[in-house]
Each structure stands twice: as C-alpha cells, then as structure tokens.
Image 1 (cartoon, rainbow, N blue to C red):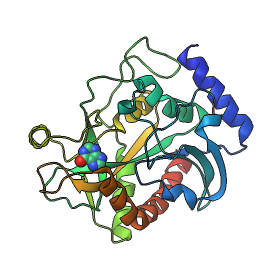
Image 2 (cartoon, rainbow, N blue to C red):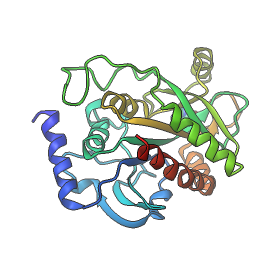
Image 3 (cartoon, rainbow, N blue to C red):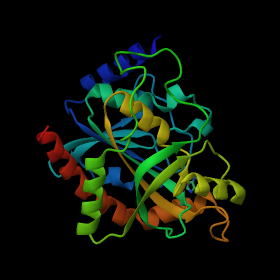
Image 4 (cartoon, rainbow, N blue to C red):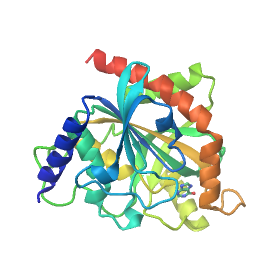
Length: 279
Ligand code: HPA
C-alpha cells in the first residue's frame, strides 16, 4: 500500500473514533509522558488500534494517542514515540507525524530527553530548540515525493517556528523558569556518545544531543506544520561531566522536572491556540 493510503486509513479511523478535531499536537519524549495523564476530557487511543501505527518498544514510552482538552483548547498528545534505533524505518518513525498533519494539526510541539553539550547548561533544565543538526545519516523523505503531502524541495530555515519559540520563551519567563536555547543534534543511538563525539558535536555548533525529533520535524515542515521543540536536558553529555550516562538517570531527571515541564506546556498551549485564531 502507498504511504498516502496508509496515512488516509489511519486518519479515517481517527475521524470515526473521535469527534474532536484538534489543531495542536504534542509528542512526549522519554520520561515526559506525565503531561498526557492530566489533560482534561481524555480519550485514550492505544497506538495498536490505529491502522498502520508503529508501536514503541522502549521503557518510558507508553504508546497512546490521547485526545483531550487543555484550558479550552482541543489537543492531541502522543504519549511515546518510536525511534530509528528500534529498527523502524524513517518512514515508520514519521508515520504518526503524517497522520497528525492530515488529521488537521497545524502546530506541533515535540519534546525529548537530551544530553547537554553547552557547558553553561545544567541537567534538569529545559532547552527551547532553535535549530537542529540532522546527523542520522539519512532523511525520512528520501524516495519518491508524495506531492499531496508537500513539495520535493522545501525550506528549512525556520524549521522551529519563530513565533512558537517566542511563546515558549515568554511563557518560561512568566513562570520564572530558567530555560536554555540552542541547537539540537540528532544521532541515531542507541549507544550514547563518546567524549570525542561530543567534542566533535560541540565544534559543529550543537548545544544538546539526542536520538529523536529531527525526522518528525523534517516531515512536519514538508507538510506545512509549524514546530516547536523542547528538550529536557536530563544529563550532561559524555565527557562534559565525569558522570556516566544511563537510561535510569535520564528517566529520573524527566521525573524530577515533570512539574516545570507540565507548567510550561500548559502556558504555551493557549498562546499557540490564539496564534491560530489570528491566522
Ligand atoms: N545522548 C543522547 N541522547 C540522550 C542523552 C545523551 O546524553 N540523554 C538523553 N538522551
């Protein structure tokens, strides 16, 4: 089946399953799924029920699409994502993004756990992604272009929407939350980086490193969906601090900043919604 038809089947399923028509969606990364549990009027749709949806295999990533209400705004929340390192193809990794776009999402907020490279960063802080480095050695749009999704060649000079970044920064300021800003580098993983790789990434201009988000942002931009990316700096990257890196620490830090993270998302969503009202 063509990608287009697979996406259409999933969208038709969602349109029949819920009467909600959200225009804002969130993707919750490793250890950051708690936000979905406190959304109002929740309809929980397991990924396994959605035609052609991939299922996450990683601990800390439950697989639910949660449709709900946040302060009067209808939202779709992906509680968990799949990664390239799990063995999924780039097409599978970005399938949910395509479904969200065709379901009517105009603004997408992507979150992830990341290692801090910038020495001014602190573990436990959030970073607003300003731009990215795609270092996954491939691109989800390689292959014939689906022109019903977007053009063959397209601009990526504002991959992370400026208005959404401003909203995130002003929301953080209002909440008196210290947030960082920076460039997110995506590697495939699943191994964490070596200190030499981190020194390389630093020279390339990266402030944080992770294993996700970039494929979804590329596909969202292709389809005209505006993106905001927020990294939770769960640890300092290899060699930046003397500590060794482990998934438990990543999850624990996610748990520790859960409160800040939820408050920030709750402040951002209505502001993004009012952006849509004015469009
Ligand atoms: N490197 C890559 N991905 C990560 C890290 C890291 O240090 N921490 C959380 N996700």
